Length: 108
Image (cartoon, rainbow, N blue to C red):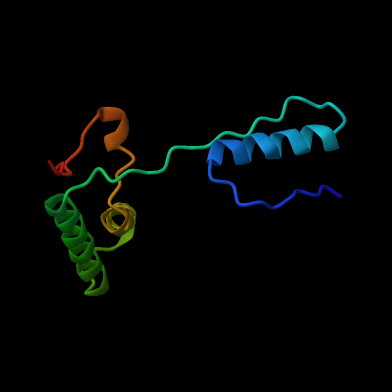
């Protein structure tokens, strides 16, 4: 069984290095394991952008539950509505990142 010593680490990269070392020792020199720290999702959506997305998601939900949209239209709009709802709650749009779009105002 792999045992890791739990200590109060202050550096996340140190934690990953120690875990890598423990795995390598346990697996007898198998060195292809590499753990890395991922960048956290940084907010890239402003308040207006989030409000518009949330409003559109609510409008699609109302249209669906009142029977105004159905079939494939409801499915496609429902998928977009779910994506808009989640991104408005989180404040991060994954599609904005590769495009370099940021509607969040920077505090000076």
